[in-house]
Length: 339
Image (cartoon, rainbow, N blue to C red; front, side, top):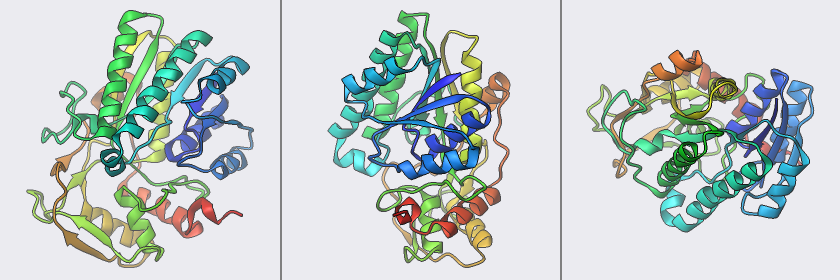
């Protein structure tokens, strides 16, 4: 297949692009590089030995987007492009609604004009909000608690309505939990701009002495060690999940929803300990008050993806930490080290 990957230079996008190439698919990446680096694609080409067509285009630029869709005869789109920081979305909600929701509407209109109606959408477990129900099943009511999560929820609604109105569309909504890890080569990985929003990259930056210590928000949750429990999934497992969904859609019309997670939870302190083991050094941390809206425990029920896609995450927390440490150790400043 010829696949357009929006946001394909980013963390999950670059790993999925690599997996697509390794399976023999042709890939065109569209990315505005506002939160990513073209260096990731150069390394994807190096690892795969295959070429990636790249177009630096913003989804808000309708004319440029249409030009890309007209230039290639795409079979499908995997849509990652979007702003993704919860705190930033609270501070600047208009930018999130404009970029994520309007950008997706532009993409859908463009796809429809080009006759491309197969889409795998990068959603998120944030659509469930602070639900205390575990494990989280796809039928759980959606109740996002921040603008970032609400953009994902609104896009899911748009895609659901689109699928109901036009049966030609084939859409997968992938709600994934906490991506972690890196490619085993250590050549591509997570390179957040500014202060990391997620636990693993923050821990990795402490391990490589870019930051002094990890702040652990909340030590009094009703969990075995008092810290929050989350479902961490290896980014390579996640990439394979996107391809499994794409293959599923090749023979089925409609809108489908799947959690992509391990079905297991790890506490913040367990993650820090596992990373300390991988790095061979103690990771410094300190406790702080809970953050508003954080659930004590959140992990996926991945049974639907296992049953319907034949997909399951099989990499362990130890493997995630080992791979993330290898990436961070080899690239202490991320892709910005490249001149």
